[in-house]
Image (cartoon, one colour):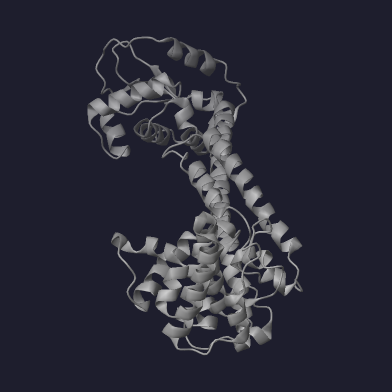
Amino acid sequence: METNIATTPFGRRPMTLGMISSQVTARAVPRDATVHKWHVFQDIKDARIALGATDRALAILDALLSFHPDTALYGDSELVVWPSNEQLIRRANGMPPTTLRRHLAVLVECGLIIRRDSPNGKRFARKGQGGEIEQAYGFDISPIVARAEEFKNLAEAVRSEKKAFRLVKERLTICRRDIVKMIDAGIEEGVPANWGRVQQAYQAIVGQIPRTATRHTLEAIAEELEGLWAEVREALESFVKTQKVDANESQNGRHIQNSKPDSKSESENGSGNKDEAGGNVADTDNVRSLPKRELPLGIVLDACPNMLWLVKGGGGIRNWREFLAAAEVGRPTMGISPSAWEEARTAMGEQQAAITIAAIYQRQDQINSAGGYLRSLTDRAKAGKFSVWPMVMALLRAKLDASKAAGNGAEAAAADLEMAGKVVRTESRLEISDALRRSLDKPRRGS
């Protein structure tokens, strides 16, 4: 008796070495082997790229497996199914016949199925007298049993690779996030470091990440980022370890002129006296004796001419509003965080804080950490031990000293210094403290 479910016309199909290899493997399947067909199919789906199978080909394989009535596949059982093309198309959610044939060929090439062609090329099953199938022509799915262990190992390798890829991407994400946070913290807390260089190094490493990258590429980039992470972390930890709660105020709150240990300051040139023009405001009595009214804008600009660089279009600064706008531009360029700036404005007042920014900007090449220095001055302002007058006067004195060094001579320098004192007294109409007047009138050492 013969049951013919023929749909595929007879035709010549080329034989390949891959097909022969699959047939050899299928014949070698142990007779006692048993597999769960859907478990093996899941392994095949996970390893499909390694096997060279396509999504459409796996959809057809899914349909072919569904034509076998048993979930468990045995090595000693008949594993041939013979659905028609129309049946396959329906169970594979519909696709053109040409597409079906193309992806069936892919399954054969990948060694997932074997063609069992009848003499006329059609698919059918021949049954015996008892109704049992004696001979079937169609698609042999015995490789599902024969190669089940291979598919499982391939799938595990693919899953391991995916996990490793996911982990390295997580490493990158966490490392990038931590570095950005640590850089912000370093700037925020005034940790002495070249944060501009650190940011440039970070951007250079991150810029190497391509749109699509292999795991090995990402691991190499992650190692570079982790090296930078360790460097930044070490800088922050070293700062925390060396920071002393009871640090000397004169060291923590030193002024612009001696913000670097190896830089010559006005007070150092003045026999070490703690005079106001030298920039040391640790003497509370001197601070209290300073004028309480505001410095004239002209005096501030004369002491801090670099502020004019911050004006768009190269124009001048005509009022305090424009001066404050220039300070807002200069603050981030020095690495001063928004919170440090806001704290200074609260403690000193907006105008005094802007003058402080201007003074720091004038001498930024002599300051290790502008943000940390501003926070130190802010703390002193909260304690009533800070005034912008000594800073501005010290900058004026430095400017006059520079003119003297350029060849104006001692007499010209002394005349300029006397003129600066007159400008302060005349323009502000203030009663200058004795300490400030003495510092303005006192000739510098060596003059």
